[in-house]
Each structure stands twice: as C-alpha cells, then as structure tokens.
Length: 301
Image (cartoon, one colour):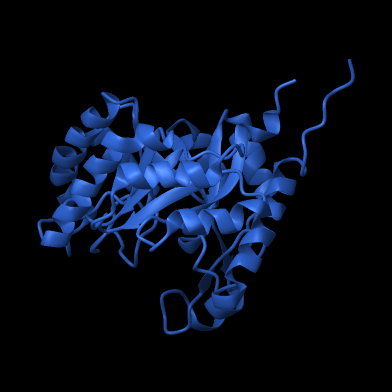
C-alpha cells in the first residue's frame, strides 16, 4: 500500500551559498529529514547550479529524500546591482529546477522600496508576468514567501506578499495558475492573524510550506502594546511555539495539500547557535508526530 504519510514530507532548508551544501546534507540526513529546500540569499554568486544539483543528488544517494522547492530570497523588482542579481537568480533556478527534481521556486516578491503595496503592483506584474510564463513553459510553479521583513502596508524594502489583502491584489493583478504561496503560520501570528481559517481559504494557492512557528507574548502586549521596544512576538522552531501543528497539517491534508514542510531554522531565540540542530531535529520529530506518527501502518486486509 502507498505510504500516504509521505504525501506531506518533513524536511529542512539548506543554504545554497554555503561553502559545501552537499557536505551539510550528508551530515544531517541520518536524522530523518525527508526533503531539502536549497535556498539563496539575494544572489547565486558564482555557484555552478548544475554542479550543485549533481552534488546534492549524490549526497542524497538512494535515500527517499526530495528537493521539490528551491528558494531565491531578495528584491527582484528594483534595479540595484544586487536586485538584478536576485532577478537573474530567479531565472537561473527556474531554468535548472529539473536538475534538482524541483517543481517550485520560492522567494519574496520584492517591492518598490519605501512605497505602499499598491505602488509595487505594476512592477510586480511586469517582472513576475515574465517569470510566470518562463516557469510555466518548464512545468514549474512560483511560490511567494509571506514574511514582511519588517515592512508593512505603507512601506518596506523586500516583499509585498505578507498580508492576505495583498495576496488578493497580487493574484488579481496576475491570475496565472502557477503563482501561489510559500506559506507558514509564523508570519500570520506575527500579525495576530489566525492561520487555520487562512489554510481553508488559500489552500489552492499554497504550493510549499515552511516549518516555522511563533510565540505571542501576551504579557508584553498587555504591558507594552505591539511594535514597541519590547518584542511582542518571537519566531520559533515548530514544537516550541503557539501553533497546533496537528491541526495545521490536518487542515492541509483536508485541503488536498501534497508536498513538503521544510523547517526554516536560524530564527529561534533559544534553540540557536550550538542548539540549532538540536531544535531542528526536535521539530522534525514533532512534525512527524503531528503528521500522524513516525511510520506508516497498513490497514488490515
């Protein structure tokens, strides 16, 4: 019988710009990660992408580990040298996705800096209209990560895709079927949004999921409010935050989601530095339990 537990795989993100991403993968796969999201911050740099794909596939070997999504995080809408490198990175990853076995490229939309969200829509349409066509021609989807990167509706530097009202505007502007979301509950909680109803509404547009959570510090809110000197929310590794991931995964299953939940590390204020992988492996096992257990069990005949 097909192992339907693995309709949703649990994995982690790997820095594609690291000196030896394949070596990093070899060190962690025995912990039980089922998927890998290689990602780049702003630029691919001088990384040979076909060679990287081959090295990562060699590191995975005969393990049942997928690389369904690649990440390119920067601002492809503006025109500094780094922004142009981000846009070129999107194009390169779209063109080479098949070498990884990937079907999705994820990242920020970018933003016209210092302007309200509406001001970015014409440039968003221009850039991602072209990228959506390029991706569709290669059987690839594009998923927008929903992190505000300290921006808001009125201003910001990186991303317009951090608010469900913005998603409405984006997908009205570009209704291409291969444009969607790289979703996670963390960034909803940062805005005090309940993530569960959002899954039900936006499930057809959820192409990839990040395993990241948040803790709302209600005691701080009651004393200091939000967006003051004291941080009212902490980004957490799954298993240490407020989200009920059993319910999150159940809602994703009910909505028909089949894909990866890749843990986004390097944010937890406690399980970081020397405790980073300790926290990630705790999250890996926790998410597997929330998915339905550590192993698939056949029904009796």
